[in-house]
Image 1: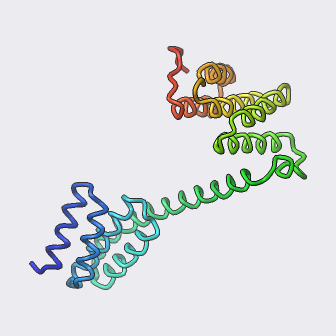
Image 2 (image 1 turned 135 degrees about the horizontal axis):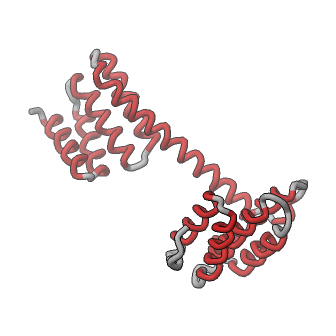
Image 3 (image 1 turned 180 degrees about the vertical axis):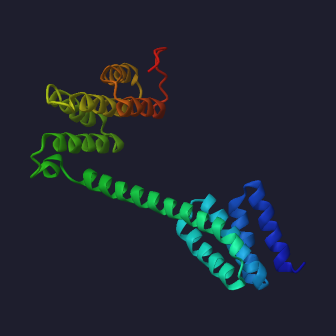
Length: 224
């Protein structure tokens, strides 16, 4: 076994133990040391596997492309289905990162812009409520709970008797209030749960449950 192969073997063992950061270092070192062409593709696929586990999606995609190219060059068609599946997983991770980045960009814009400017030109009632809730969440994250609660309460009040989305905005407003007052979310979340349960809408119930989980609140014995 050559020194490069020994290094690759260490990387494989680190993958098995879940030490993916160390595995990446060992495998990259093995590649840099020079591996036989029959092993280089395998090394890149192992590197991509560890990078995927670390959610380094762009790096994983580059490594996996090298692995796929090597498999084609070596005529190793048997490994292509598993490599293509890994590429699909990587693409899903990249899409997730893009969604998160888009949300962060939106959150930054909401944080930096006044509510009046955000609402300028927006006439649809529900759109205005959504934007107001976004601003409330932004204020809560920025450490302004009183202002966040005040906006969420306005949404709750504005959602009275406004058609089919009435209960939805009441629940979302209560969740926003609970998030802004994490020291005592119980009564607010219980009220949100009662409204969501009464509406019988699974998405609302799920939203309340997720909010309670993030705030470490355990509901009373009633089961949805």
